[in-house]
Length: 148
Image 1 (cartoon, rainbow, N blue to C red):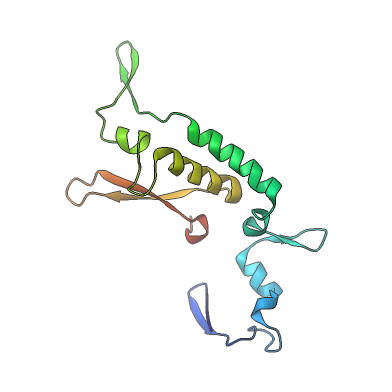
Image 2 (image 1 turned 180 degrees about the vertical axis):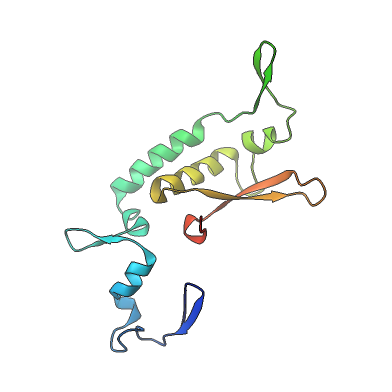
């Protein structure tokens, strides 16, 4: 079994790196520390993944993300009289209807809010047209796969 740590590929077989007698599945402290999370007073390690297993945590995140996702998202432009909805703007349909081929605007915003609430960050890849360089799609990225 190979493990990629900070760009280094390490062959660990079925045992942990530091202690060959320790199975990697037992969650050695070095591995848990490298993946993030903290040990609570109860002795249980808490990180984004373990917290999401709690029905109370997931319920709160679901309420927040559903609320944010259901809010309208429109593009406005300034006018002499204030503002108006800019339906003809090239980003309007992407933000209001569907930012990519796989999800609606509401689903995309819910996913982004789940990431913000669970990890503190939300990232998206903006796919641009080859000639125009205008945004074509907005694709959510897993926060754990992004280095700010």
